[in-house]
Image (cartoon, rainbow, N blue to C red; front, side, top):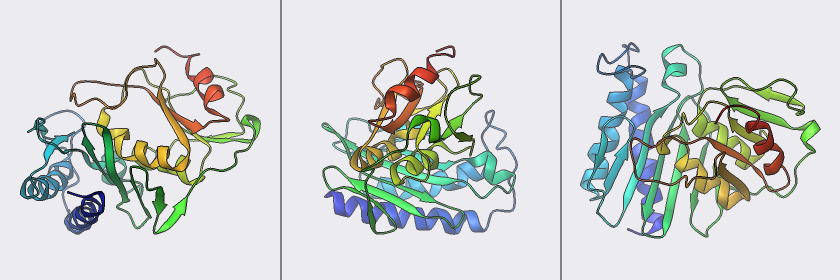
Length: 248
């Protein structure tokens, strides 16, 4: 599939997940594992059905891995921020990232509570609702607004921080300039589905995404956990310095 065809498929999938979520009445736990909700499984069902028809391999937070030997594998978080969704907090998303032997090909992150969509193709730039985004300038660290997951250290030196609760969206906010950096403050807490879709969008927008321990981020391993940190080039060292003040 071409990158353009993949993005068309991803938009269709995000639309279908949005329709399915609009009808959810049970926002309780799935009963299958901790921190999984019934709505996670409904969203995953919509994604898997369409990706299987398209012949893609899949690595999903909710259902694991299948057909990872295929030329295209799609890394999926069908409902990133499901705890937000379960509590009525309008900050949750569907994230999809297609990967081939050379890395990410195309990705989409769709805000599922009435917000924007971001997408990117390898070498084709990053987009928010059809408008190209690029981080051409950044404030000083002392004036920066930083999104975090987990508890930050004392006196990090930034201007302000926010904790939104959906990393795919938070990383896209860095890409489009809504915030100036994202730091995962928890030790190795994020799976590849949490950041892969937004990682390509960030890269195409001129934002660096690194693991706080220098590990490879894009791994097709459902059990792997990483500590992503994202910022424009002028701020990435300051963001990493803050993260290194906490246990890795």
